[in-house]
Length: 314
Ligand code: PGA
Image (spheres, rainbow, N blue to C red):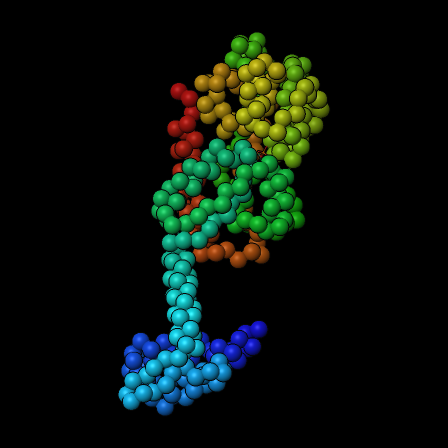
């Protein structure tokens, strides 16, 4: 395709020479502007005219008169050169991290703190775009298998995917109930007693559910599951509606007191897990992704801790 095009409209360099001749008004001016000899400029114009199959200009005295074919070629040549200049600028912006897209996928429960990581980074690089996908743990793993994003945030890493990993925040899963629930009055609650109450559980594929099921299995206890709910917020509202108790990440409760949900002091809880910030070993990181990684490693952890701290109810 490229060589067929060359055969009909000449090379990029020939178009550049034609433009210089048009803008300078003579072969001599073009040769000076492009640091070429006059015979070279004339030769390239001749080749261009042969490729196009039409004359590009006529010399009348000392002046050049461009034909319709010449003017049409000049118009397109200018568009091509402008586009190339734009591309060049865009690429140098990318090299200077002034633009580009950072793709990040995180488990739903991580959405409570990841924005606090993104905020200061975007302030530093206002021209960048962020594609921020929030899905449950299983869906994030599927995105990871397809290599759709630069970074992934969730807990309980899958085996065999070849990952680079930074563990960066603890994720405590706590037992919760309506603030008026009798269990909230008790100093400590046994796991057996907790499990007698209607239990609200996250959907299959959720990391919260994964950890909760593993915990109950290890303890040899089966919760009294009343509802499966694919959202932390919906679980909180169901707890508020006295539909049951649940186990959720403490991150979801940053404003728990306002909502009237309380953490219950159940034996053996919280379930302690960790958030992983990971990326695929084989995937080349863009300059922007590399910059973000460095930012996460040097400042990110502290920033998120602070953000979570300031969100805690008094
Ligand atoms: P979830 O993820 O929002 O899917 O429950 C949390 C996690 O990965 O632990």
